[in-house]
Length: 196
Image (tube, helix red, strand yellow):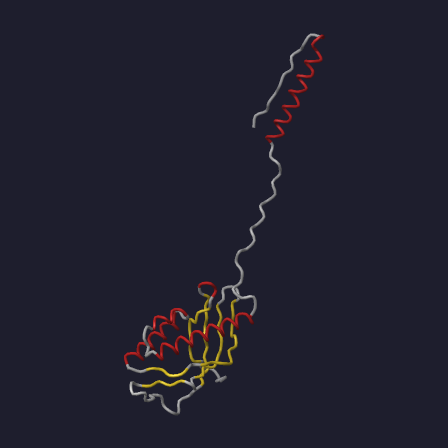
């Protein structure tokens, strides 16, 4: 920044008053110009509020979402089974990863064998094992109930042993998908104590 200087000439006495006025105006103008060149103290920028909100506000909300997601997973699995395993890739609407791969493989096997499912899968006793409320991933325990289901051949004859187990303890993992909808990522038999 360059300093501005103004010189006032000496004037004859009869012109001294106007000369003083000119010098005063020049001095004030210089001060105002210099004042305009200095920057005012600037407050540090306020950090923007976080746009990331947790997927779930509480464990209760996560539990309700997991219950709804697993119900949709079972409903679609039952439907595809009833259709003889046709178009198993539809399971991608409700599952990803290991769970999706296992469902597709199971349905393709059903189709190749000429078998169909009957009835609806059910579950109960769903409890959270662990939950990350921020990213929406969680692991639950639940009891799978197959008592109202059957698998039949083309003659409508059951291929399921009459003494089969009808309740299975499972450990199920979920991840948050698009629009914060939970998807089943893994569903495995629980090897610990049977809680069903």
